[in-house]
Amino acid sequence: MRHLAVVLLLTISIHQGFFHLHVEAGDGFIRTRGVHFLLNGSPYYANGFNAYWLMYAASDPPQRSKVSAAFREAASHGLTVARTWAFSDGGYRPLQHSPGSYNEQMFKGLDFVVAEARRYGIKLILSLANNYDNFGGKKQYVNWARNRGQYLKSDDDFFRHPVVKGYYKNHIKTVLYRYNSFTRIHYKDDPTIMAWELMNEPRCSSDTSGRTIQAWITEMASFVKSIDRNHLLEAGLEGFYGPSTQQRNSLNPGLKIGTDFIANNRVPGIDFATVHAYPDQWLSSSSDQSQLSFLNKWLDTHIQDAQNILRKPILIAEFGKSWKDPGFSTYQRDLVFNTVYYKIYSSAKRGGAAAGGLFWQLLTEGMDNFRDGYDIVLGQPSSTANIIAQQAHKLHQIRKIFQRMRNVGKVEEGKGR
Image (cartoon, rainbow, N blue to C red; front, side, top):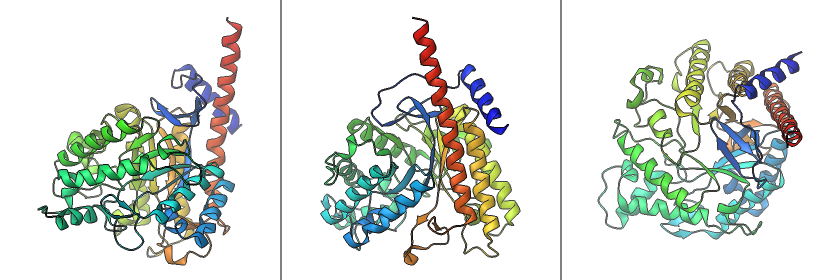
C-alpha cells in the first residue's frame, strides 16, 4: 500500500511538471535541472557519508585497505556519495608543502581514493580548502603570505588578499588538472567526482555584513567554472541565514559568521545548496527534545527555501549526534537520523528540492584514533546502520519508479511519431 502511494505521488509530480524527463548524454556526470540532480537523464539522490580521512589514509599504501573497506561497507548499505578532503596544507604529511609545491605521495593517495570510489560505484564531493586550522586551513594560507612579506591582519584575509587568493586559485587548478595515476583520467574529466566544494564551512566573522564571503564565492565559482564545466559546484555552507533574509535570522543558533544562505547560494556557478545540522553542538545546553524541534524547523525551512527561492537542489551535507554528548543513547542518535532522512524522503517523493544527506562520519575497523564521537562503523551491526540502509533503499525505489516512468514516456513518444 505504501509503495502504491509513492507511485501515485510520483505520477502526480510528473504530471504537475516537477520533472521534465528527457534523455541526456549517458556520460556518468551528475547534473542539475531545476531542483533536481540528474544522472544520465534520471533523478539522482545522494544517500552518503563524510570521510575526511580518505586521502590521508590512502597516502600510506599499507593503510589503503581501510579506504577499500570503507567504500565496500558503504556500497553494501546502498550509499552512493562520499564527501572528503582534497586539501592538506602545510604541517604533517601535507598535500601542499607550500604554495604550488605538492607532495606526490599524498596526491597518489587521493588518486587511489578516486579510483576506489569509481570501483565501488560511489560519487565524490571533493572539498578544496578548510575554514579551520585542521589540515592547515585558511590560517596556513595567510601564514604563507606573511612569510613572503605580505601584511595581513587576520586569517579572514584569506577571502580578501590578492596574494592569498592567488595561492588558492593555484590549488584549484592543480587539483582539477590532476592526472590520476590509477585511472589515467584528469580529475576535471572524471564523472566519479560529483562536485567540487569551495571550502569546508567558510566563515568570516570579521565581516558579518556578508559582503566578503559573497564576493569570494562569486570570484571563486567563476574561476572553477572557467576550468571545469563538467562538474557541479557548491560553496560548503552550513546554512546560516544572513542580511538578505533578516526575517530568517532568528532561526540561526546564535552564530554570526558572515555567511548568507540565500545570497551565497544564488551566486552564478553554485549549482546546489548545502546545509549542516548539529543541534547537539549548536544548542548543547538544550534538551534532546529542544534539539529535535530545532532540527525539524531548520531542515523544513532550508528545504522550502531551496525549493521556492533558490530553485536548486539541497543536500544535508553534514549531520550526526555524538556519543560523547551527556546522556547519549543510540535511541537519540537514531531519532536524529530518522528525522533527517524523513525530511529528505518526504521531499524527494513529492519532487521536492531535498536530494540527499551525508552523515558525519564513516569509519571502518581499526580506526580508533579517528573517533570523534560522530563515527559510524557500518561493519558493526547497529540500529543506526539499519536506518542508513533503509533510507538508501527508499531513495533507490524512488529513482527506479522515475526510470520506469521515463521509459514509458519514451515508448509513448515513439508511438506518437
